[in-house]
Length: 226
Image 1: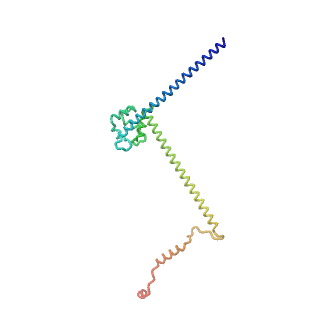
Image 2 (image 1 turned 60 degrees about the horizontal axis):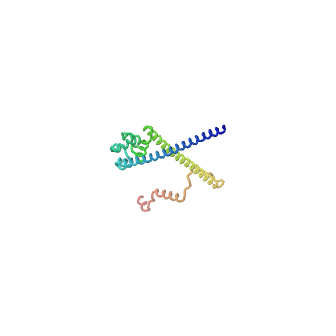
Image 3 (image 1 turned 120 degrees about the horizontal axis):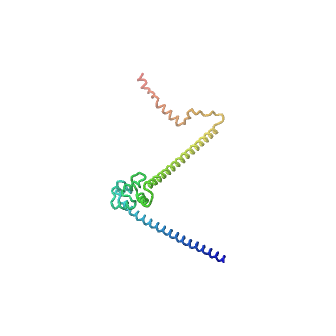
């Protein structure tokens, strides 16, 4: 009987574990399905809201510049105010604009307008916290640009220094070559001495000096002057 009771006890424990595993697996499957359904609902909601926001952006962009300014947003229609209020829980359109205008340009393109309002609609953080996050991201991007520019400048400086060193080596090589071509026993050239003139330079200078000398008087002019 002891073995029989032990067998029954083990069988009951195994059966309970099996039932528990089935229940947990079923709950996980339902959770995954619920998550997929929630994601599909969020995607559908985003698509519907973005479609409304794009149409609103076109209505607000009075000058067709591709951007909505603060002044243009002040002329928003009451129906569009209702859409913004339902999406962001903000009654004042200027409050929405200030939350989206992170770079301080007082203008929003269609991507900043639509994506920004969607983030305001879905985020649980406060508006000021979201604004600070956007400012930090913008500053981080600018720091990256500065680092890239500085890296490019350093590479240019290194390239210039290397070119200067190669130029100095070339000049040294030319000087050594000229020193080997100098005849033995010839005096070293004086750096302060003027370089030898070519035949063309001598001819030009002779012609210039001749043009500066006064012309010789003719024989008749000499006798008249006497």
